[in-house]
Figure 1 (cartoon, rainbow, N blue to C red):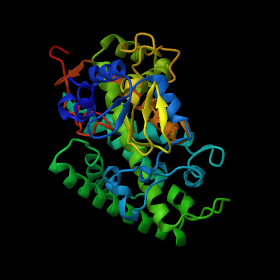
Figure 2 (cartoon, rainbow, N blue to C red; figure 1 turned 60 degrees about the horizontal axis):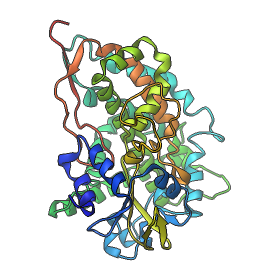
Figure 3 (spheres, one colour; figure 1 turned 180 degrees about the vertical axis):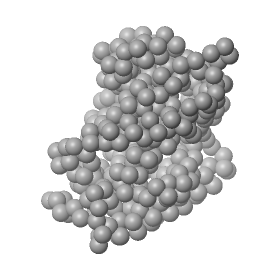
Length: 407
């Protein structure tokens, strides 16, 4: 098929379970202009260079065709700092990082270790004597959403509302063309507004009644970068809440799926939990939770592997393709939990790399260590499982497992 249809095929739900042959085709064709005017980049070294190139903007308002600007950035709607360039991105990111991790809050993440372990154990206790369960619904989703809500200060009774809004937002990231896309985007915008308003109201309560949570810290921040406006706080808190659990849900679920498909690797990790940190890094390369970065824009004409990408054109970095590039990784289609040279794109790269990576790593390591013993004697109920529709945040919608006969 012609290379200018690759974006359409990659975003087609029919290919969600196994997009990797399409990524190989992308690498073979090099940087390719698509029918919609975007440019796809799938080679590791090209992606790495672009992630660190100051000529590449993360603000889609710099596109020359306003019709390619995502709905979220139209009409002056607030955006989180990942949708800005420096210096505004740097200012907002620094404010968000102060209550989250080092150097200002060095014990915030590691201090969650016992809490994450306790929540994991409680969830697994609920699976006792069950011969069938859904890894997503019963474990991979409730663990990180509980952790991030407690970190931000969201009451437990409001978690179902958070999940409903989040589902609408993630569904809006389905890039499949057609009339339904507009309704998805509208629903996603409404959900963003609802969750942002909710978090803004919750933050207002923390102004007079602060507690030991991140919303309180953001509201009362007195650092050198100034205070967040209400709109900035709403956008930042929404990003922290969604990104703080959705990618981890996919990472845990993709990890369980990968290991159940490879009983030898699962057995090895169960017997030697010390290998888990390296195994999680390999999962971030082999089956990453984020496959595409679709909102990059050149501020000037940029040459990538001999192809000139014009200023203002939509630029899509296919991170998951770079993670399987044979010019960078030996035997890239093999899952190797002891792989040593593993500088993957699991958390992006450059100034926009995910600062929540330490939390996602810790949650996934502890989650898999706790869950793998419980999976002994279990098998996948269906393979491939049903996937979410989003090609950006890729992971199973459900991952049902059942006890194998005779165990």
